[in-house]
Length: 173
Ligand SMILES: CC(C)(COP(=O)(O)OP(=O)(O)OC[C@H]1O[C@@H](n2cnc3c(N)ncnc32)[C@H](O)[C@@H]1OP(=O)(O)O)[C@@H](O)C(=O)NCCC(=O)NCCS
Image 1: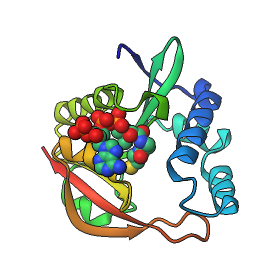
Image 2: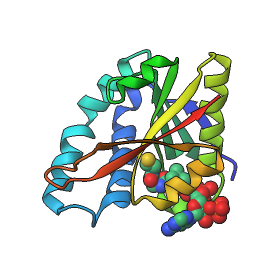
Image 3: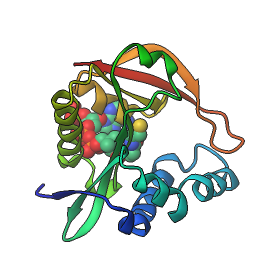
Image 4: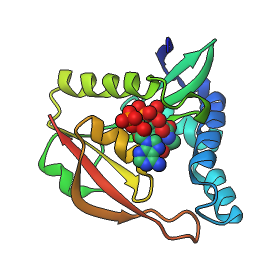
């Protein structure tokens, strides 16, 4: 599918908030209580929080747009705080890749993945890493197609009071 990919700016904080909340809700609803979902969305996916992230010049965020509206987004940054052993390498964290469910399976996620991998190669990163919920099999299959492998490390990723475990995947370049 033909989409327009562009960098997201702080002026887009409201649009990013809308798609971030929608896609997070669609992905994880039913895996935690409604109250946990609501408090997680309010804490992490509000315009002030996302606006701050967009104001950080080292955070890269891109929309894929169809008919001038975002249908997917990608966020990445060189950061090590949630997986410090990655400091052994020059490492890029793929923090978020989310496509509206109506647009899954149409090649949009591939275009965003190509973008981050091209960026990583151009900037001489040694590895790209990410966390994915252990039961999110669709996403894991998608990452596997790109050569991401289980690192053998996991971490807790609770949604409110609902415990969840993410696996860390990595792809050495
Ligand atoms: C993860 C995501 C970005 C991938 O984009 P996509 O367009 O769905 O990806 P693709 O369709 O190319 O690849 C998904 C693969 O999983 C397969 N798949 C679908 N449902 C599956 C399931 N329940 N179990 C295992 N594999 C599954 C698909 O068949 C496809 O494989 P194929 O190309 O060999 O047929 C998108 O699904 C998404 O936004 N999901 C919700 C948000 C999310 O989970 N983000 C990642 C958080 S870490």
